[in-house]
Length: 328
Image 1 (cartoon, rainbow, N blue to C red):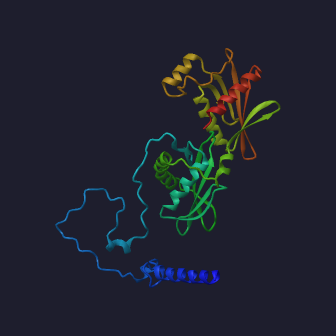
Image 2 (spheres, rainbow, N blue to C red):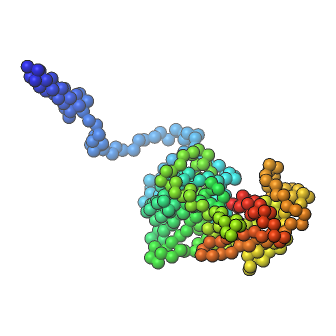
Image 3 (tube, helix red, strand yellow):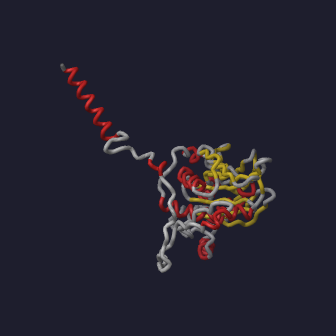
């Protein structure tokens, strides 16, 4: 008897579901209704109506000109945060990069979204290597690289153009600079509204360009940079740390330096050459302390070493620590 009652109830439920949601039920499915839609004539707008006095964030081109367009225009950046010091375009010769004061795992989703919403097709996006390949035109593609910067918790963005047939890099600095200038406001605005991070890109946070190791009891800074950029970075770090360069020999990779005296530090701060942070670490050097800072290139890396002229190892270590702190 119980089985019979259960069968009757089950039959009623199935029938009810069919009556409610079936094709001929009270609430039929609507997901395929769009197939029956027809294109109607355009709405006729009276000539005496005026246009609304608001900005159109999604402008539509005149239908007459659509056939003449060769590509869909890129969406405009409506909101921009110009002048953000945490996002900068830097250049050394033909080498250009965008410097961002945030971890690569945060910069990665912003970089990917920039190209996903552009007029170009993204061919490959690898969060492990930090590379994004973009189909640019018939002859070339663009490749963006998201890398960890020299400074702790910083990102460097590189963009190159590659010939599709020869796979060689195409030198076009004016084009690269123009594209990077478009990205700067996008990054600045996105960073002010985005606080997430990509778990897939966490590996990029560990690929730092500046590392410290010990060699024969002395500290050495290892930079994953070529000699030209390492020389420029150390030179800027010396200036930022208020360390006076008495002489230099670029051909041998040597800086002859001494720590700035009090009046020299005031001069640096007055003309913007050094840090104005009064809480920064002070270097306790003896009177007349002088040093040699050497930069050598080995196996596609550069190494920075410091040596006191009077053989004071402690002062040399202190100086090298300050340089490492000021690298960016």
